[in-house]
Image (cartoon, helix red, strand yellow):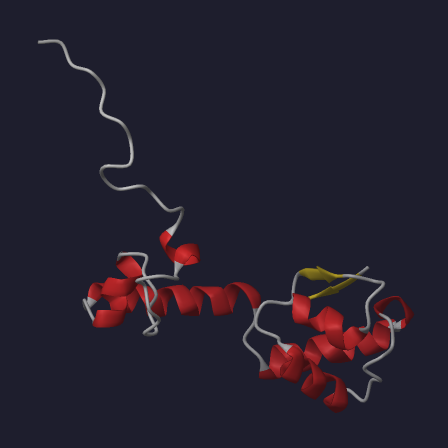
Length: 128
């Protein structure tokens, strides 16, 4: 089991896919890292040597912001937007889509489960 930037990456997967398990590294960054480290992308993680893993780790530490540090940067950016009451900050506060997506029909993921409003339930009999 290889550990890169504090993340245990899966042994059975190819290296170029396994590196994307690290927060902040996508397919493009993964390919760039492997070409810089001179490692074949289709090699399985379990077949990597300790030397190759350390080269990958060194490249990531040198060139990329990943995991906890990146998450902290993103959350402070969102907090700053909320504090200055920008339009995007207000959208974050209200748990609504931030980047201009429509909310009349979609946006269920962000807004949560649909709730029925008015008239759909029969009225209960009241004592008079």
